[in-house]
Amino acid sequence: MLGFFVSWLAPLFIVTSPVTSYADQIRNIHITKSSRGFSLDTPLIMLVASILRCFYWLGTQFETSLLIQSIIMIAVQLILLKVALDHRPVDNTPFSNYNSASIIPRPYNFWQWRSQKPYWDFLIYFFLTTTALQLLLGSSPIYVALQGYVALGIEATLPIPQVLQNHRAKSCHGFRLSVLASWIIGDIMKQVFFFSADHISLQFKLCAMFQMALDLFLGVQFWMYGNGDGPHVPIPMSEKMEMGNGRLN
Image (cartoon, rainbow, N blue to C red):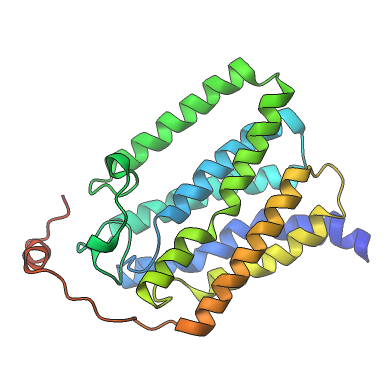
């Protein structure tokens, strides 16, 4: 039974998990015409981590199902990012449900840009830089190991932006329960798969355990805050005028 799970069921779940995890989120944003409550850091984290994982595979040849998952994840997250940017609330940049003044500023407003173009420019430059590093250092075992820890470490931080947003808004509004459920189910599947299958490096195991702890804490937030709108935060008059003029800058 365990052999069937490790050889067939778990790889199938892993390969299809990008679609099953985020299809409902994409559909919800498209239908409601709003990405309010959804953290744009989610596609950032998954795109960076998945790109790095593809290059990491070149140096370690880990399970093929994990490589296929990374490729599909890139495609899904690009769609999710596009839909979220198209339907982004005008009153703030990547976050909602609380005043944009409460957002911690980042250097050069990284990933908080008003225009869509810088998002796509960053991803292109990141891919080209990673490709160049792979050509220069891809034969180094130290670089390959470091690449794995960075890729999987970044992926393990996936729930953190959503945890912080839920805490600030005192609500899980905009974050789909179906996404959380798929994350936790995926965590359980990965724990069994990573500790049973061959060709799974230590990086995968450590980061999977850390991510599962964060996902379970997200579950606690759903229990604490629910999926309501959270406390109402008035929008400044200047932003109301921009919304009325349809400006997105």
